[in-house]
Amino acid sequence: MPKMKTRKCVAKRVKRTGTGKYRHAKAGRRHLMTGKSAKHRRRLRKDGAVKKCEEIRLKMALPYGL
Image (cartoon, rainbow, N blue to C red; front, side, top):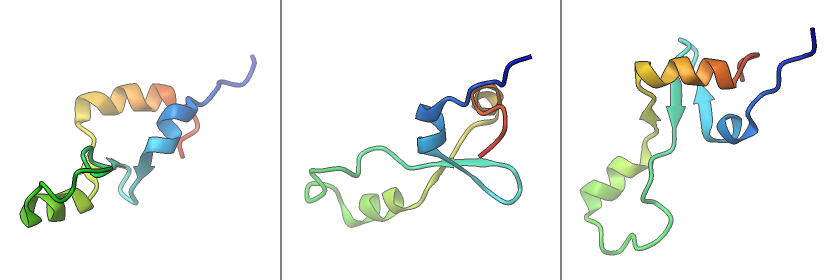
């Protein structure tokens, strides 16, 4: 059986925590930050959690983990 390929587009965008959950960077941080409130910018700093329903798709895209 040949080796399964890792989806690199997913591997670059997602990190795995110690407990096995996946984290991703939030959208909206690239530019036009001056128009956003300080509270909004502060919330964008933290990583977002990947939903349980999406984790199944991630596990298929990352057969050997990260």
